[in-house]
Image (cartoon, rainbow, N blue to C red; front, side, top):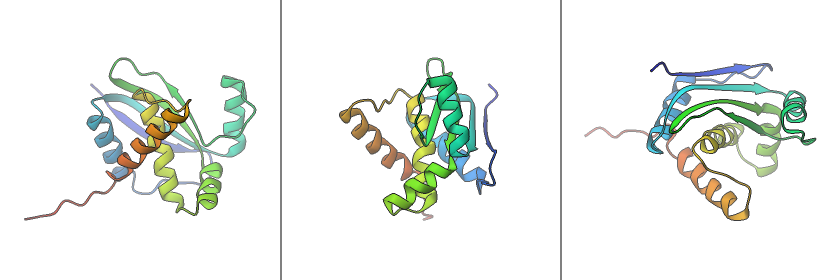
Length: 145
């Protein structure tokens, strides 16, 4: 099976160290008992994501992420659109580094594809706990004996 994780941007944002992000995403997906064929991350502006929100979801609100889940069974196939503007603003409001909030949003989209929801208060709490757990898997150092 051909597998692909791509990152593209319509802003001046450029994800650094794509390999580390790919390895992390693959590890999370595997840990959750899933596999993938194609995952496309699209980094864009607030205005671009608002336009997508209008066109496809009929929502008139800014958001940090929209996930188009085309998965089948336990095989993830998705297009994930992330507003870099919104992630920066949220990170500032929360007093967090941009990279930390970006990782949370990136894995949030994957978790939706693995069946996690965030519609209710309980689902939101479960989603946040799972995001935290997944974020701890990024750049885990292996100790040599």
